[in-house]
Figure (cartoon, rainbow, N blue to C red):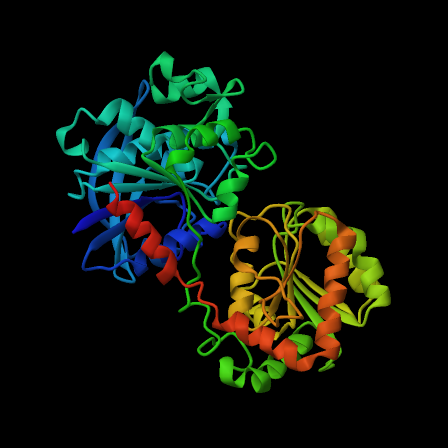
Length: 479
């Protein structure tokens, strides 16, 4: 049986700030448990959900040598969904009301975590065949393994996989300070090591020192090897292209299942979606205090309100769309203040057409996915994206920009061949986005049968982890 250990800074159900937590919290459950023993190791944050903290049992404690520092580390464990989870405990690093702090704090915090993970392996009696690291917070694990721990006989056969979930976050900080923190040799802090543009770069370390690099969609794997998409590391990734793999994220079909979802007004499946979805639409309109109009084109948005998610395009065209088109928009999320205020402004101006909840509620998000006719996701870049996968699963037709995982998962509608699962536009342009929204609305308004077929094709697509996990199994088996 092959042993796999995922190392991550977050995972549901314990701690979540973004999509990384969803991936690490769901992917391990889908491996063939007769062939793979998959476990997860995380920091034990003081801000972690208290109900989980109560379930943790201490396994061991030890010291971690971090440069000149000799720091305490404890290991605790619990089981969730049949998977063992281990937690590195140190309140000096992991206290506070949020898992992440200022970058100067986090570079030391996650250097400690990276080294503690490697120190913990023999303490938990689990020396993995593959140590699967995720994002810059674990980028130093392959580095420490290569530079410090290979001398341990039992560590010599460990292979490392490093997954990039968003290349914009790299863990960059002052070279000499990181050298002091890690205690690693001078030659490592050069352009051939973890130096990048005059700073240390944990993400670069993970890329260079791992045996394989993955990212979360095939298109994103190509995009990060370009100057436009590589955030300064395109040259490094091109030099490592032989070990770069694009493996699409999956969706946890147990969590997102319209047949069983208790957060939506009317449960449904492919065969009764035409009857049940209008009930969800009416509930969504009621929930968002919009007029209950069965035939209006209702667009859902669930997102962080940032430039990355395309909200500068939305800001440019929103007034015109709301003034001229017979549409409704139901929006949920938080983000940059200017975009939050934009939604407040247009909600006041067009109360019959726009309703925005500035905040987040999981149950409200599910009702938007289930009740909207279309789902807008015009991202500047999107490594994979889960919202478009959820909307497809819930019979809500995605309208997306062709980038990263959005391009890989949403097949553009073709009215001549009657193929496709959604609508897409290629250039990062507000008028192009508005044009595709109007085109989708036209199909919705005038070709009800074709719109229903669009919904059904989307719902029948399989973006569960079952497909993606096979690619990971093949990668692990290649070592």
